[in-house]
Length: 396
Length: 160
Image 1 (cartoon, rainbow over the protein chains, first blue to last red):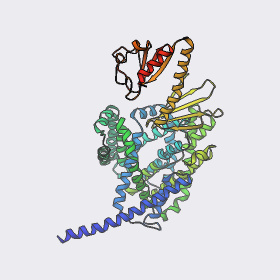
Image 2 (cartoon, one colour; image 1 turned 45 degrees about the horizontal axis):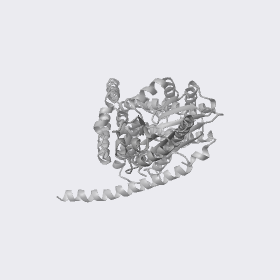
Image 3 (cartoon, rainbow over the protein chains, first blue to last red; image 1 turned 60 degrees about the vertical axis):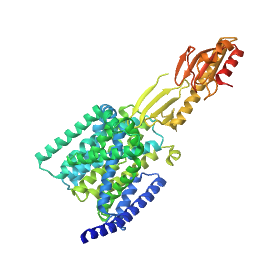
Image 4 (cartoon, rainbow over the protein chains, first blue to last red; image 1 turned 120 degrees about the horizontal axis):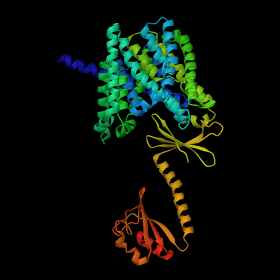
């Protein structure tokens, strides 16, 4: 009896602390978001900086209840990927794969290999180097889509090429993340191979379901009541993500594949309902990642981060020029394609956080944070420099 | 006019065409119903000089504006072709007149000698509607006859 009341009492204190912590985190996010809008840069790098300062090693450590924040961050990833998947229909994924596989392959090799090599040069393990390859490879769909919209480039000729490349990267992610999820567990070679085979089998099965049964599933889920739809969709999403995580496909990929499966009215309604949740929990995700990175660990990795960032710009520029050139676009459009692909963001952080959670390599977190900080800011700036109309569009 | 169609994964479809005066125009139909109209740059044909974002409502108003003029133009042409023949497009009111009543109820032919040639409902047309045809609010009715009888017929239709 006494124990029970003690537990209730301490829980109450905890709840108050957690709420205060979360309140501070959210207000800091809100202020940073405003600053980002004022400066005309994406909010992701500022959220990361906020996390660095609020983390244990930072000048203003906040104790927001790490457990809640880590769950919140996980929900953030799941919602980010669900909504990304919702953007695409299975058809679009198939078409994208067909039309841009060559440029997509080049994208993966040109941008992944330097990261892999950098990992090995830094003396990291094979797994950590593969994770770094993912970090340097994948562009930020979120930041790039936003830039295309804000700069009034939706109708531009290079836009479909950029979007197809992003689609390719997302498909590669759906294969890459499960492999990495198995690798970070550190299983033996045969065990790992088996687990990877199972994971990829599950992904292939999910794609097949998305193609065949997408419509039926979507119709069964739909409800006119937004409350019921929200409960249903969040329930199914967490369930699918959780199961995906349990079979080491990674929760993010589970959510992405669910998003691809959903279509029609459900997809339309969810695209309106979920973004506010994604913004809150996505904010948690970036802050939480920043909080887990010790600010003191940042300066030593700054030089390698700058080096791979410079290489990362070069390789994306080469990829963009190649893809746009193949499509027969003019010089300026090739340049716009090239710079558009430079920003890295949410995906690099998602890949890095897999490694950080598993404790694969202590330098991975700080290096990935620095890398994304640099490219999420420099990428959009490069793009704006090449845009003669920028004053008119930068404000939105 | 040749219309080029390009899919924009995650956004929608882009249509492109060249106007008779040589400008290239793009229309993006987004999946959420929004539309973008863009005018391509003559110096850099891959880029837009500018683009306008239209909501679903904006787009349908603009379409009305663009399509509406072409209907009046065509009617003007018709008037020129046939001397002494009047044509009028009558939009059916919400409740008054012959709305929710049949052509026979109005006895337009007997009273005015004008005739109802066609009715446009939504985006389909009913050519030569029979006496049992029932008007609905918002129908656009094409009435033909001499100018006095057309005026009288449109008064019966609208109840004015």
